[in-house]
Length: 560
Image (cartoon, rainbow, N blue to C red; front, side, top):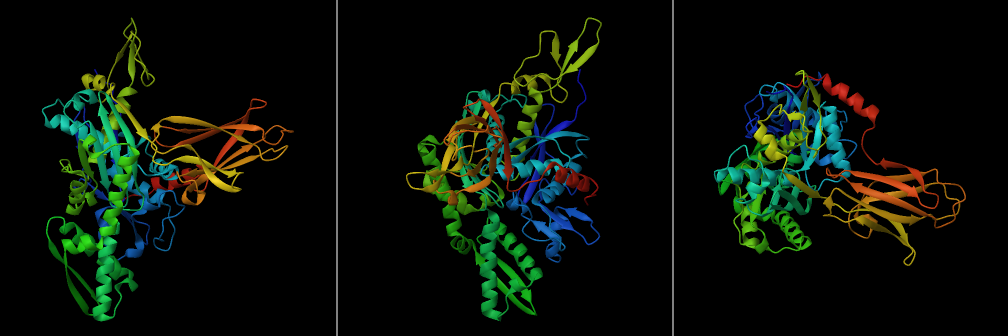
């Protein structure tokens, strides 16, 4: 017997393409195609003069003729107040644009799943707190219940482990990582080069546990940057031959950007192609080879290699301890990526699963695990009446209750409850303090990067003056001692300290990272055991009023 319930899904909200997936009742992971029949949806938004909104392929095609009305790559601006360009002369937040993509994905998915009750949304492992909050806000604006935020490499590793198990003849209803680990590599390096971001993560599968050991990368490095090198090369050559700069025309530039992106994709399967451009009756047919592309982008690839080598050093590992290299993200399809990794590691990278879908699949598995751990139970009374209750995560139902899976077979539910996952923070967390010896301000790191989550650390600070009533701490993300090399994510304002405190009075400040990588702060004035009011003042982000306004606005938009 089953209770009807909304399905849960996993969403890969990508810079260039997004995808949505779910786990069916028998434990099989399925990507949901959009209404155009595509398994991935371009993360592009077209806003017409009459306010009609298009998301996906149509918006991407319109970019060539209406570049000022199409938004792309806004994921790169997550955590900023506005998208870097105006759309139709208006400013839009990255959260609102992302919400439109999410609404498109969920709306199209209802052709397969009538009702969606919640979603796990992925983010780059190198996203900081502001960008993670912005992603959660995008889900809220799209009227989606965001069950959790999971790092993209972690999601990919989870999906890959399950796929490896099935490939060797496993049962789709067995989610236990203990069983998966008997056939899947025990330690995997996930190399995730997407359209706009780059992550590299080392994950260990051991028994029933999946533990992230270390993560690194760059928020602004991806396939788009490789496209830019081709665009610059073509435009410079057009200027040299015809004296005309295509970059002076938004329409011509958008067209060349599209052609260069296609050329990059073509060069992943062929060794040569041609880029064609035209303006004022002047044309250029420019042959471009895979070798030329690799030369133009050698420094970009070198940056990914440096990140990989630094990560191994951070994790105290050598290549002989890495069992598998998993390629994720569309840009990882470039042959030069696999060649570089093979050269430095002596191992052939793994691309057995579609790089564009694997992250959404892992998010879907994580969503299913969360749902099954918190699924309803039914108390059966002597008279046969039933009472629906929701047990706490990790708490087994009482002996007089029967677990009734509302979306999944009972054996799938039982298996997933054994899975345990841990992640790490990608950035250190600290505060700006004054070093009395050097008479300068420094970053006092409280939680170093690559600390297993969740975690909580405590630091005691002294007040700077007698009778101080307010302490204002600048909170930084970053591990360098120089605050200028870090990102300030906000301020912790401790108010209403007791009167008459002497200089140097201790104030204990607690910093906590949760499993989603979000940050929480609290403080206590120790001398009088008084809990101080703590307010994390962020430099960016929406308050509840703005979120409600945007949610209402997006809910009224029909996406075509």
